[in-house]
Length: 213
Image (cartoon, rainbow, N blue to C red; front, side, top):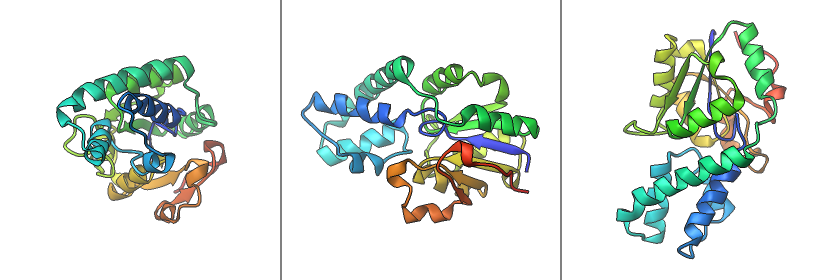
């Protein structure tokens, strides 16, 4: 193995609570509410797919979807800049793979405008050789295309790659791309039996010690 590909939201930066908070604020303007369990069921989807799901659920006018999407992006980026927290072990995991001369990339469902914001916050741009977004793809995660695109940009084969994910949809995407997948679930989801599909489950990036051969 010579390539590592990272998801972003919830793995490199603690942005899932920010997405949830921003979503709640926007939906609350229409007196609509989503529980944490409901929100987590759609974690890992692209914003358009996420909103389309809830527009269907609440029977909202889809003519407003693009307006809500733009408002959500603007609010999330502002919140990430003001209070985004780097996940535990990010420096450690980048250093670990850099010392092994691994090619490194990011494959995220988020729009590129947010990916660029986070990567600059983390200060890891110089260590990344590929950054791919599922924003404009026909399908987002759990479809594997964003991972396949990242591997192609890195000139890597699927069996060269190990991926790091924090969502069920992301894990399915990585495994569908025929890549190794390490998952770092949120504490509330850690015991979900679906994580058995992964190659390794850990509580923190700091718990990853050995690069598979």
